[in-house]
Length: 311
Image (cartoon, rainbow, N blue to C red; front, side, top):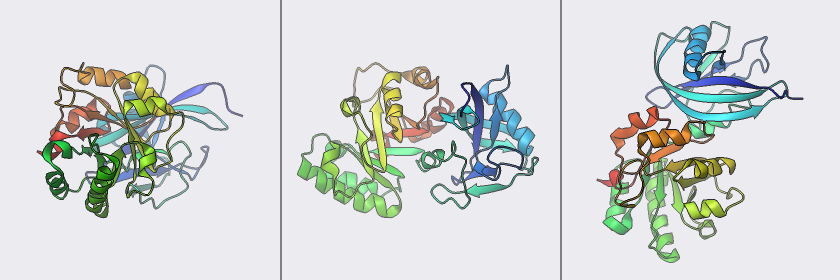
């Protein structure tokens, strides 16, 4: 039986430049001993989550965290306790991890886990780590179909959204098939911004929901990857309630797609995330690839690019 009290906990993923991350095993004497997790611990009275993260990583493995950004927030109910868990990604640190509590460490690659079992609250985080830092959105209607397909060959994108609202179903199906033949063999994921019912049998990895489709749904569509476009904290919360894999929050800066739209700015973007969100959020709207660092500092998983991806 779980306690009514919710314990505030922080956890962090040490991130290498190649995308690999560190897991640690839980030592003997703790609940779920031998399970693998993202290291961390309880937030003590008077501490901020970031202060707790730095303290825990120094106590548990002897390193000094020098650069960390907020990421996801989850609530998980165990038999012995309920935890409010804030995840950070740690980009830089001083020292080499040492097993100060007798734990083991293992560097892992997204989608290629070599250790088990995972602590239940940590398992769902692994899928989020498979999402790339840069997310591309097509604009074939603006630059032309052949030009768009040619641009797709110039870089290996981790995830591409086909967003071609002016195409009919048959034209869109043809474009998706051609885009998939470029993106997927290179290890990328292809999602389509369209009616989910259209996508049956198409060579896609998932669906991307616009605001109207997100509002109309009462259950997550049955695809491996499901994302949504959101513009405020309410819509972002809805994406989390449906168990979506990510959201694109916009517009951060002025865009040609929505001229004159009210802008979030970075403060507004961070404000939508201030209470914590259970899914990765990309910043979208007038951004470029080099905006990644500032996006992460404001809580984003990464940046989504439309015109900025193809220039």
